Length: 560
Ligand code: HAS
Ligand code: HEM
Image 1: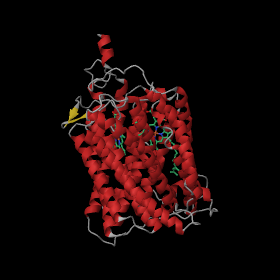
Image 2 (image 1 turned 180 degrees about the vertical axis):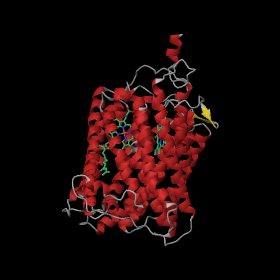
Image 3 (image 1 turned 135 degrees about the vertical axis):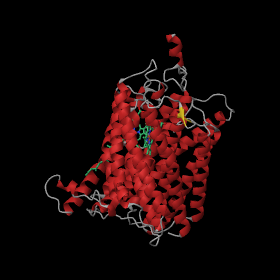
């Protein structure tokens, strides 16, 4: 890679990790508020919801998008042996950084405490919406450049399978491009004019539906870079081979079909949308679990092969032969811990997807329990590990404190397991999400005090504290590596796994067109009825809430 492109990738890693310090700090603050350690609505001049918005936006939108672009640049350049266009990559970087700064300003000024899901009726400063839109457009620019590199490569390599990592990257950004069209419409046509005061009202259900058209596909946009690492890198790190490359191709194409037409599973409780389409999308959601099951078995088989190659005998002994604490393959630790967390993240996702069970857990602490096992599990750990790996390679610097680096993912995993157990247990006892419990339910002075949630929020606090400690250690390693002296020539050299079975090339699993057509048909069938429902919606108005009280204002008045 040339120096300018290396620098662009390094900035795309450095900027979000710097912001992540704010994101991780607010994670800690949330568990402190929620456990009732403090009974305040704000701390250090930052309000609970302002902090929650910073936490969600930085950790789940800014970090993930920057990383996907940085990793995408490196993946395309490494596998197709052609580096991204400098002008396009620079434009993409400037748009993403500019957009992030605008949104960060609005959030830090307290003008955009609308949470990372930012649909109406919560209203933000127009710069927040504009900033988010620019971040997204910036990522599109990088993607369009990769498409042009790929189409040229494919012309010269018609009979050769697209490398799995490239296929995964292109599929991921296709999903991203299609789903962000809905959020672009939501932001530019509905939210910005409303936030500027040009339109007096907004169709709340439509904004929610457009958001979730984007919002669940977003989680697979987070996940697929990690899947690319699981399929193409992890087996090699383990000392083995990828059991089936074809399984990976099938999984990625299934994600292309099913990642978007399932967003209504976030709206099972939304009165504007009809039951038929909710059930349909519930069933489609079970479908999107299939590529993850394929991945689970394929990667487990690859790991078993690695363990046996290392001399394992018997049924389970191969597990203990894997290089868990080998600091030379520290990336293995980051990836395997992510997979372990994802077993629980996946199972809880299937609970969420079950239309009737969803009633029990929707809007409770169970939900953050679920998604810290997914986005803060395989996704976050893959980002942490790979950002250190790429930083060290692209700067030619040795890892700072390699032993600490090796234990970070284990510490994080222990933290997440305790944290999520607390939240999910609490959720089953009715503990709400997005609530500063310290003000009411966990304030013994309040008439809403609920002692059942003491133990669950304490577990959340203990686990969150361990996660915070792991986060701090990671920052020391990451910034320490950045600041240390160069000892080698900068390179980008991913450890790519060989394939165990040499499978015959099947052209359908290397062609985008038929899959894109199928994707469009499924999307159309799944979303036209949902959008029609929101346009015809004339339901009752929801009761108002105050930020300081989790109960609706009307019921408080009625009680009196
Ligand atoms: Fe989810 C809510 C359903 C996956 C993230 N999800 C959320 C929210 C987030 C999120 C952020 O249907 C909250 C949004 C908000 O703020 O309101 N989710 C699912 C389903 C899946 C799923 C069915 N979610 C994810 C992933 C996420 C994520 C991935 C982030 C990256 N989710 C839901 C639903 C809701 C929801 C409902 C709405 C709930 C509500 O009411 O609000 C599936 O994709 C999961 C499939 C996964 C598996 C697991 C496969 C296991 C693997 C590991 C194998 C391990 C090995 C290791 C090999 C079937 C691959 C072996 C170990 C050795 C040591 C050898
Ligand atoms: C929400 C804690 C790291 C993504 C939350 C909540 C807690 C929390 C307690 C729920 C607050 C509420 O609903 O009232 C922590 C702690 C962390 C951490 C202690 C580590 C020190 C992460 C990471 C990610 C993440 C690494 C993603 C990469 C999110 C998201 C939300 C959330 C998307 C939802 C925000 C919302 O409801 O608007 N976090 N978290 N968190 N967290 Fe984390």
